[in-house]
Length: 118
Image 1 (spheres, rainbow, N blue to C red):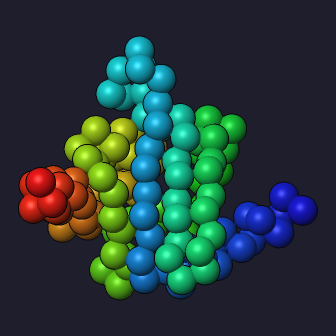
Image 2: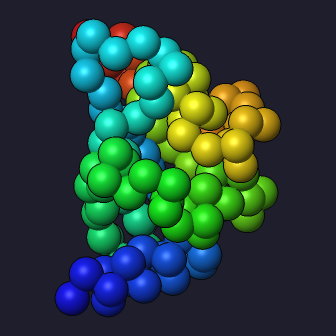
């Protein structure tokens, strides 16, 4: 069963053109500690993964890592600044991750919408 879920995650990450993400960590952990929980929501399949990164160790599927920097995949998040710092520590494959080029931060859009609704 676990193998099937991992295979599905790999397929979704390879073919994703839109994915939302969020990272979680212990409040007391330093920036270099990385990510403890990675949440991914794949738009087309309406599938959500919540992964305990610490349990994966260095076995994070390469397809997931590549998804973050693949030009054909739009990755969105909310307030991604700290998430980006921690993701870069997750893997060398993400060291070139650029928040302005690779990730769409919807925080400013949400703030503008809230302002318009008042």
